[in-house]
Image (cartoon, rainbow, N blue to C red; front, side, top):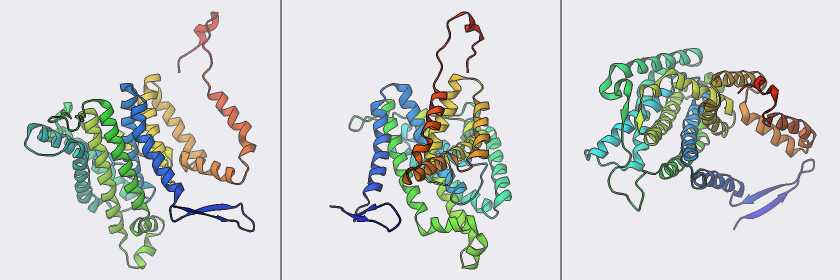
Length: 373
């Protein structure tokens, strides 16, 4: 039974602390889990469940990228290498399980992708993390182009231009679960998304995670107190590779096909763009970025062929106006609300909301002037 203590400072508003249980944290994580697992059950259409599944995968990969960019200050242009290679290993494990050669549960196929991402990150990251800043970014870009070119040269593993296909329905159903219906895959992705989010949040709160922040801010001082900045970056690189591989394995299960596109530079650029749009300073920023990735690359692409133009404009506006991303804007509004000053901005927000409301299409003689955006 938690006990609430009221604490009132001399010059601050009263606050409440819950002991021994942190009720607020339990409520946030519980609501997050309910949203991930409840959304596929509420949205019954296959399209909505597919979008929810893609959002869960994007959240994992954006959070893993933020372990490098936001927590460690490592700008990577080749993060898709580890999610893509994890996806290829996962689809091969799925095919071996379907053939009866390997006894591996379908629900743990993403774990195989994560282990593959961890292994490739340990191998390639040992060289990559020996440098930082611009040199690190250029090395990751070169490795990404190298792996992408190898994907077309080794058709035995990468499947050539057609990629590698699989069937996620393996063996008889267990308790009625065969992972054939999309809702079952969406629930599996939601469970993996919640577990990976919790694991990455816990990683950022460990001494190693705090040391990674110190390496980001002042690697010379970290070396002075006896720690190796390169080793800290390497361990964080492997952790990011593991979670990226899990996301690749989930994508292999969701789409049942993995092509060379998943290791290309455009995919790595998308991870960078949407992680930055969501916000790298706050932990929940990449979660927003993952949702934006689905809305931008899937939903917006269905509305207009000029969707890359709008994404580019949004990125430029964010870089100039809010370098901290949407998460920084949300935190700024929370601080305004805490000090009772958010009401002064209500007319401005109302005007912005009204401007975003779609106008009624004209049916008169001037309707031919309208254009589709």
